[in-house]
Image (cartoon, rainbow, N blue to C red; front, side, top):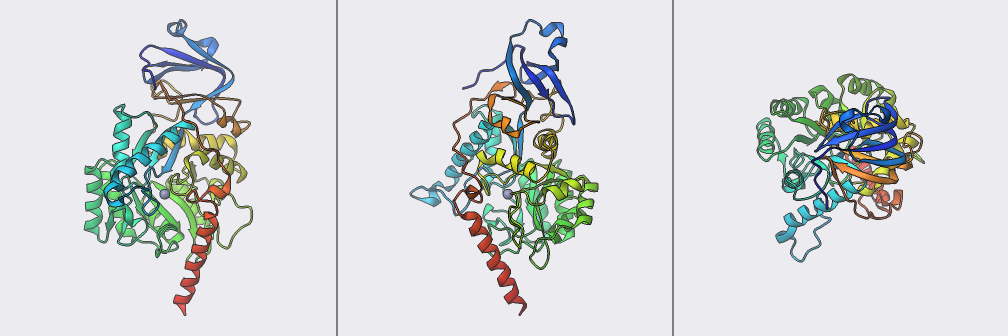
Length: 431
Ligand SMILES: [Zn+2]
């Protein structure tokens, strides 16, 4: 359980990574009052008013902003559950319980905010409220509700199918009414929905524009699921704020990075999460973020969204960060992508992701220096969410790449087989 912190208190460590680009405070301290950060700086410069506050010391440690996951699916997926006697009766409640389970796992690895990019029954909205109202301890949630898609399009089982401009306007307004913070739409097919074409757009530019216009009018950002280059192009033209996957599947079904399109994404300031399926044809030794380096080198604002819950389990988050390093992204860039930039990408700029006065006291303290070795993030000493200590739960051991896809060993191969089949099916259609 947690305790409420009303009085000021402080933490001190060998360094503070503030989340502002390039800013590291050696021998740093952070003062917290209530749910917010009151002061940060070198410990020797601690202002008078905080000198008497209790200071928790972490010698050899690093204080950094709580981590952010920008692409999570909290609930049980259709078809993978619930494991209850009567599915029709328990589907919704099981989905909610599953969401709380994933939420607690995210919190246990030091994630203090997460964006839910697709949830049946608007469960993510209810979970967000339960956290905000103190019913459950866990990360702050930015909720999308059900992913908007075409009839029989990717993720249609979430329950938000649209087929016309009026449908789109209605769906966005309906999501607003149900309390969504972000509008998520599938602008191409997806790998987990049989019969959809990942290389093709599901919406026209005009349709996506209406979705964006309506979402922005209501103060919500727009995140789109996009594997195919055609869908990425249309989304960029329509003015979306966030692209999930950006796999760059070309019209012939193969993966082909498009440098000019990447430049357009960079110029538009669109955030991109780099969780993507393997390239096709297969590239041996490829990371789980196959486009990350190319996007990064074109100046795209990449963020740490892993499709947690759909593709990788929550406790594989740190593996995801290590994969970015393996892909060639510098560690300081990875930490930005996982903190301040990720917070901005999910609409929380100025609220969390940075250690500075008036930001939420969402903090992680680890042993060692993650700027030198990302494994330091595995050695968590303290997790604070809005100034309250989060007590982590034991996490399952992460078994490595074979656990990725839907948590079942070998499912990566399964996904590739499905893809190869679909590509073959496409060839057959051309005959
Ligand atoms: Zn997803």
